[in-house]
Image 1: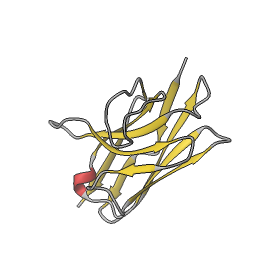
Image 2: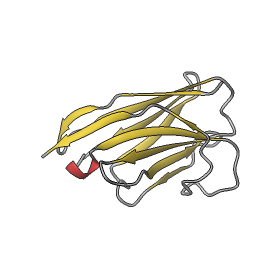
Image 3: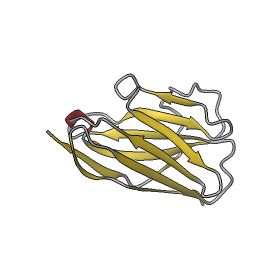
Image 4: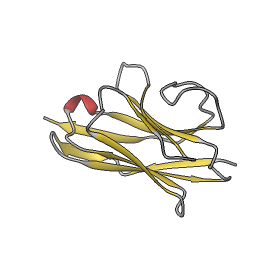
Length: 125
């Protein structure tokens, strides 16, 4: 059974940094895409970044490009989202999600079959 567990959220001042982790278990993820979504109160859940496990190619939404960086550790089956220069508008619950092999583009928010429980990120001004 596929399991994704996020960690690393918290409260930070604007301009600060956080690193989120998504630990994956239950199968081999070499053909998967791991995405990070976020949902702020009253808003839809949006894809902010995604990484293809096989070759570490990555996608970033315009709102986070240049500030967020994805990486993965094969030995630990973990994907990291380094978030720098955080802004109050980055405040949301962040979810990691797993998408089995798909021909969808990295920037597509569809096809994600497995979800973590979410971690709260709060950026104060």
